Length: 128
Image 1 (tube, rainbow, N blue to C red):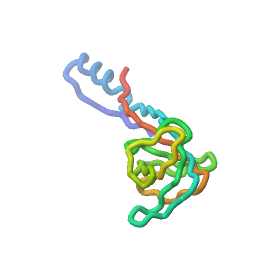
Image 2: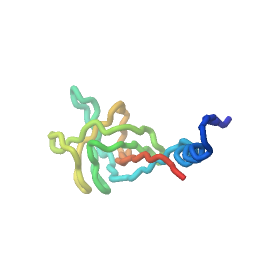
Image 3: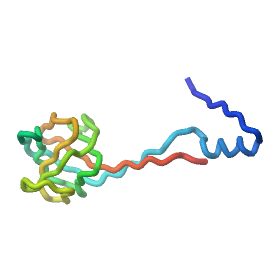
């Protein structure tokens, strides 16, 4: 079922401006993958929970990124990175080839060989 907007405007000119500004009231979501990491080991840490001991395979993983957990080609979780640890110290980003510990907000079901894909998402409004 489609939803329609009924809007009263005093002039035809204003009606045209309305349709240029709101053609379908939808947005474009652009995602850019900035890095991936493979989980090598899972650690249980008090006060933190499970930490995914990972190696960054491409790009970089940064703490302010969004993340997906991919298991056997299927996305099992999408959310935010909680924290990143490098040699027991919390850090903001880890680059390709380095090992780190990664926690995700509201997710603890890590398994070995899972892939953590870090990405940025940008939402833009459509226009004519």
